[in-house]
Image (cartoon, rainbow, N blue to C red):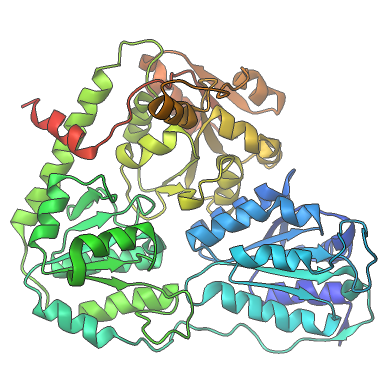
Length: 556
């Protein structure tokens, strides 16, 4: 059977289990969108800006476990989505980013093109695992098959496939054969050495890195920690990899911002396993400097062909942790470690209460009060997506996590405008969960063009906007560095009226005593809710962590 090139593209996606695509139609991909109109089993989510498509696809992938898929047009359609693709690369999230491209024989200054027809392929190359331009229709299927394989093996990440419009408009091509190949059973090298080191160690600790946030890895990490009676410390962007409510969770470590409980654990440990800590990152470098040869990494590798791999895919990494547990002796309960973890949590929570009480009656009041209230509403069925703003500073310290999906952040890429498309992607992937976005007003306005998309789909999400009319993180940095601020103002917005203009529910909170009722109303609503929180921004950050712990100790 023969297909048109566009039909072949969609059939290949279907064979890889694609059921949701985020994108925006355009001249160079109208052939693909026409083919999608005959594919009712694939949900095409049209966004109002292409960068939102790639961010939504990232969160869809993070919450579903399947690669996110993006389809945008050539030129500006593709480059508009570049930042979101880079974010997926930094987060280690599998994504297949498909764009249109100018024709093979395109003239200079062709529509959506520049002089070099290969400029898109070159543009995406540094922020993807693979960037390729397809100019022949008979290469579309094999290229997409390769794209899915590369996106999901080794350290997961995005790939970019540009399909020239001349390939989409050529003659019919033959039906593709074959299905999806699995790399879950990749041989693991170096595992015997890891097991030997564990067997020889009297005391083992674990640091959970970003690549451990995948649910299958997180589940095995928890089981291994219990098996070894190892306290687990998490780095900044792996907040939920080890649920903080677990009795072996010791809390956050960040290079240059540690605390007495983490340092005591590092001093005592004969071996520290960096599970999901990527080699060459700030965390890995800092941990290696602090711990020396006592620190070893157990993680996916960037390139599956590397011979020193501890694991070669998410599933293999999870399997590796399971095999470590099977091959090592179960250790006796450590009441001292459980008490250390509990004491660290108690003192930090007490210190955070002191911190918030200091400003509780001040007006304007700190956004930490809103997160304190949200934390009381959380359970294991809630997913919180946080944007880059002052909420990003407070959330990883204040919000408990019940599983690896409780709190998802934009990570080291740090793109503002993350929450609106983020909750869109998460809500479509997990309709069984409550989805909450927390965001500053500047970041909300960056991605707000797809709040209407959320409303048109009537997704029951809550987006809480910290409406302080300031780019709060930059305000703070400027003030700390130079003693003054410049150009950090954000226009005043009536977010209740904004929500109602789209047919959503708008709720405004001006006093902290109203927060609990406001969260209850927002979380129980049937459709989308915009929760406007009129808090201030000019408050000290809740750091260093040791300062907060000391405050907690002084309350006794």
